Length: 487
Image (tube, rainbow, N blue to C red; front, side, top):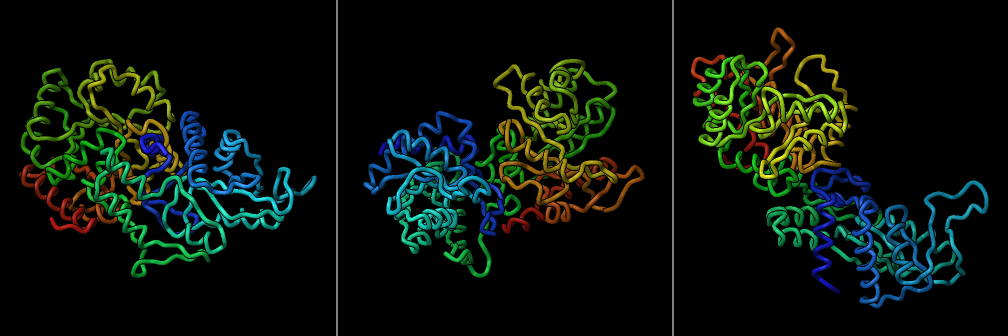
């Protein structure tokens, strides 16, 4: 088999999000740091064609007795099995997930005879239960089943479990193989490969559906809140989130300063003081009364000097054409100087397309933070709205979304996205306008914040530099405790 073509397919599956890293609830009842969703390949005809060609070649290579029929496990494997059926010139059977309540009421569709042999085609195997469900229905019709071809074996006991029922499993990919391919391609680091290996070892699933835990607990080191920024950086799809994670690791700072001042001179003086302690500067440029080009150039110069990233908290919330103009045109020309901007998800996917369309310079790295939740009392951002925002962030334009603005640790699961949380203050409470504040420790360890926004806690301090340093140190200590490393 052409190993180069096989590796290229593995990389392509990663690029189209057919498998991803995060913290996912599996059908078998345990969480996993890796999730496969091969359903997306139906939108990529070239991937479908390559996969079916490699599987057809693989079947011939291992010299498995395909018998008279092929049967894809419903539903994801059905289109794969169909293409193999055509390429291998083998008839196909379809197993229903439910018995028809009308007509022939068949469970197995297609022409066959009792005693015929059937080869199973499956996409991803964890415990092997889906294969065995299909095997049982085929055998109930008198068909003989001894082998199954799968695209990906997660190596969590599926091969062992199916073999116990007389079905040998042959996998095109194993999870370990795919991870090593990504590591060799420079897409993930060795630490990620090792973490998944520990997870696999600690989450083996028995044939009865129960699972074997490692010391009573399934290892899941790839959950976002349990991973270091260094390990997460290689999983980021957006170049700005990757850059920010690396910057955070170097500066040992997760502090974002909200420079909500109305004078450009005051902002620049403040940034000169606290620049060494922040990873991100958040501006509200429309409140700056004397905004000018020199202010922008000075701000960019300070960002380079003190190594931080600039984010304009614009909170775009209009149709694509309008936000494209707001982003690149007008008095502020935000796209020319702000590395990141904040964006409301309420207009839908078109707002991201509009912002991307406004970027004319391919050398500029730009990204957005989508607002999923707000820190103000009485916010109308419901759980359904937050979930829809996350869907926007992870399904399309993933190279443009650097992170999510939210208040909940369990909302952002993908390690490549950053959680930015406002409302951080050493003195907890609520101000007179409904803004809620939590301590640095609570925001990092309980709310799951990666980057923490501090405004008035620093702006109103007598010594702004010392206060910024204090926030940086407390936030970093809380992060180190969260991920289990020494400071």
